[in-house]
Length: 140
Image (cartoon, rainbow, N blue to C red; front, side, top):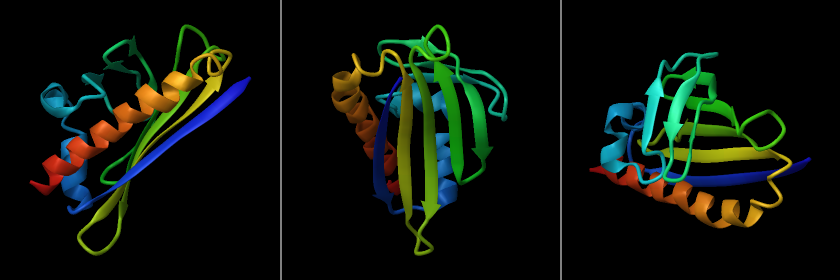
């Protein structure tokens, strides 16, 4: 089974609380988020949520939701082992009025190989665009 990891990060001149407030205001995602067009559901560990991207929708399960620090979920395409992804947003407090925002995903499954190029280009670009927009909003 193939595996691929995408890791992005950006420095944001804002507090963890400010970044978290923007990141978890899911109703406003359509207004600013170029990657995740909508996110709905109850954000509690073990709960399923609904996520819409430009080219797909899926219902991942929340693995972690720790205020001002981390949001993590795991999703799958059709069935486990075909194309699974563990997605995370991590806010690291730099203790100087800035944070490092880490946006990562670990992909596993039979279809990871065939989709590897798209993950390296379109998916990574989507992460980076979202990171930049989050930075702009938090620093405004």
